[in-house]
Amino acid sequence: MPELEFVNVRKSYRGPTGENLLALDDFSLKVAGGRFVTVVGPSGCGKTTLLRMAGGLIPSETGKIRLDGAVLEGPSPKMSMVFQGIGLMPWKTIEGNVSLGIQLQAHRQKLTAEESHFVKATLELVGLKGFEHYYPHQLSGGMQQRVGLARALVRQPEILLMDEPFGALDAQTRTVLQDELLNLWGRVKSTVLFITHDLDEAIYLSDMVVIMRRRPGRIKQVLEVNLPQPRYSYDARAEKEFTRLRSIAWQSIKEEL
Ligand SMILES: Nc1ncnc2c1ncn2[C@@H]1O[C@H](COP(=O)(O)OP(=O)(O)OP(=O)(O)O)[C@@H](O)[C@H]1O
Ligand SMILES: [Mg+2]
Image 1 (cartoon, helix red, strand yellow):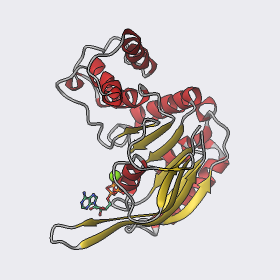
Image 2 (image 1 turned 180 degrees about the vertical axis):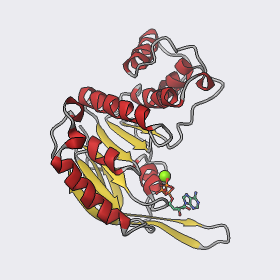
Image 3 (image 1 turned 90 degrees about the vertical axis):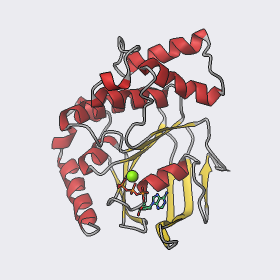
Image 4 (image 1 turned 30 degrees about the vertical axis):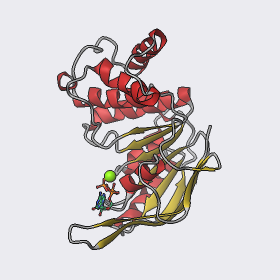
């Protein structure tokens, strides 16, 4: 599985009155192949900016991002992104939305029979069999989020970039989808870079939790999570190590709020 490496990455934006706003600075991190790495940090600390850079959507002003050693110059077919706030096309069916993942990648409208079959299989994988012909507004929030995930997975990414994918969901649905994601990750074995505000979610899902400072975002602390995977196979949240890590993370993040 490919490794993703940020070397001294930085991004500033132009504000409404022309002022310079430094969003992210001096960010260096290695996401080893096959690992599940989560970034947490206060709102506005540059997490989405970081993920968009990882996806090759915006360039870094300094340093570089390496994908398997090669400098990233733009979006790569090896990566898929699940955006903050899903972003489904309301006029397309669920099947149409997921097919779009392939159409955009292949630069053509028509899917081959094999691709269509794969779209259906992916929808089944995320628990949406039978909803292929529904439209997004006919689904619950949790189901829409699964469509977002299916649209990313259908590209068979080696790196999955996820920006607060469960942020808008109720606690119960969120817990269910966390387990489903861990289960999927165990099967597809991709490298994951995940963003969340939720410390429990971060510790529960990942091998490594990266805590950021408030804007301009820089790394404050990195925590290794050594609890065995898959975490749904036992009550990981009740483990002493889990509570220990959460209390360290909370202490660290509290100072940034
Ligand atoms: N296109 C843009 N133009 C100008 N400023 C921007 C733009 N995008 C983001 N910013 C600014 O950059 C900073 C970081 O934004 P970013 O979206 O990366 O934060 P975030 O950590 O993802 O926040 P949240 O947790 O709220 O999603 C913010 O102060 C934001 O106002
Ligand atoms: Mg964001």
